[in-house]
Length: 383
Ligand SMILES: *Cc1c(COP(=O)(O)O)cnc(C)c1O
Figure 1 (cartoon, rainbow, N blue to C red):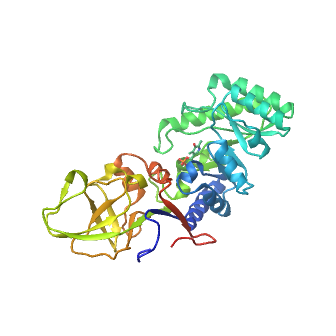
Figure 2 (figure 1 turned 90 degrees about the horizontal axis):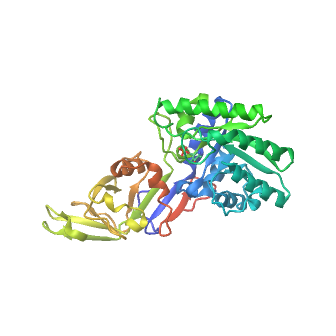
Figure 3 (figure 1 turned 180 degrees about the vertical axis):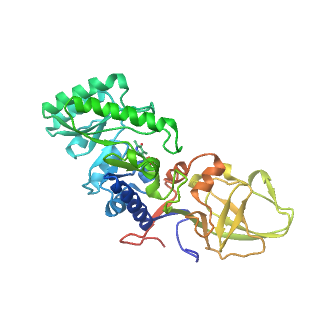
């Protein structure tokens, strides 16, 4: 991907071979502890495209998929995917009936939610597949401890009526990416206690707790199923040396070149002034395309085999690269971030500069003006 290309002005290239590689690595770790692997594809596959990622993940050893909302989960079914799919967060006006009819696993975090599932299941005449979520210390969704025994009792009653099956109980870590954080143990302990309540009520559900970080570092908490998100995209939330390969490359191209004299200033606010005569390359990507304006003066791009600084402010639609005395071709590829193997910037580097996490960078690339294409699949559709 170094020669000139005829492609959209800003484009993310998704390497499905990298996704398959990452999923195989994670599923291998999970299998060592007897656990299955869920590929989490919420947020349109963390900005990578939920359906192509889901297919790649299933081909590489994942057997479950996770979408946050019912709509995201149904979109996977509608694409013809038959694997189990778990959804876990919807607004109170969402009708679960289409999800139940499509065999989507649905999470109940409260008795109210369970009652809505029961009602929808009764209306469709199919048994709902339910995962009961216990809040073990994240204090987000999930059922609080004080309501858990009642939620379990209601679920057992509904199961006896033939309205639903309790497929699993589950929870989510707050600090699994902080190795040795005491909350990891205490959440696992609360999880085990909640499981015991379910067992005492006569249930024998699956258990799942681990996200990517726990999958990579805490095999004792893999239970029956791990829910891996960020790591399948090749971004490692923990400082391990696992061979994860970033799947997303964000690229654009040089559209205009100009030679400017020493003393000329660049872009809005004229925040950067050339200290010598230099060649500037214009790149048609800006903050409407996912290049944060706050990276102005703090980023570089990979162009013609080396990093070159972006100078002046990042605008809505364009940015300017200082090429010194080098003259790139019009149409030369400009990599804004990629795998990092050549020395190009990475999503992690952007995140570190901005004080955020790489999850936000890649998920933020889901934008109407940014094209998305795939390599490493059964088909190649990138220019
Ligand atoms: C997003 C999410 C995951 C995946 O987390 P990663 O840190 O990306 O692996 C797992 N479980 C739940 C409930 C989630 O919301």
